[in-house]
Length: 229
Image 1 (spheres, rainbow, N blue to C red):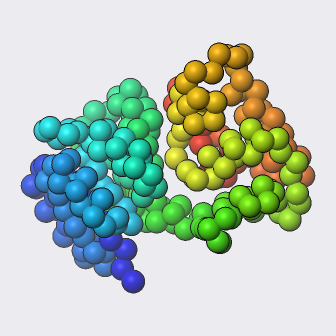
Image 2 (cartoon, one colour):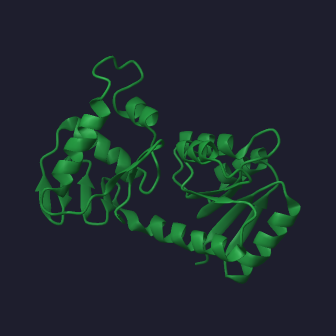
């Protein structure tokens, strides 16, 4: 079955170029000319990947991505931006984008990033409704057991919740604020470094049998579940 890619961009020339290039590579291509139309199509039928422009009238790409994640969607998002600025990239990652590409760009690079996102999407799969798998880590929601390379990890309740959040969002940068809200709630008034402490403990336990590091720090942005470094 062909992978479906939704392009959301108000620039007709870019949309035309991407449609031709992606279709030539064998993808099923859909398009939307603004953020509102893009959201409507996303909610109607989720594609395999979204190529999303940042600068659009009414609803920009950041807002589209934010609403998409709030709705619970984990569809990979490749964000297109004309601004090669750190803050723009951080904002995109914080709202839930998986990757970004600065305009102008070569079609070959976009195609390579699309292929990479499709590979990442297959890295994690739901073996059953109650299990999540990422590389050699298996998390069972029913038994609340975690195995890595067949060895059981003894996690506290909060460590389990934290790992579960990462495994629900593989290769997606999660900001500190988002993690604190999801795991501890905005009204948390305890130690300010509680997240850093739990990240350190979770790393220690997931690496204690010689496993490579999978929880990476993205400076200035947050943390990501990614096992390639």
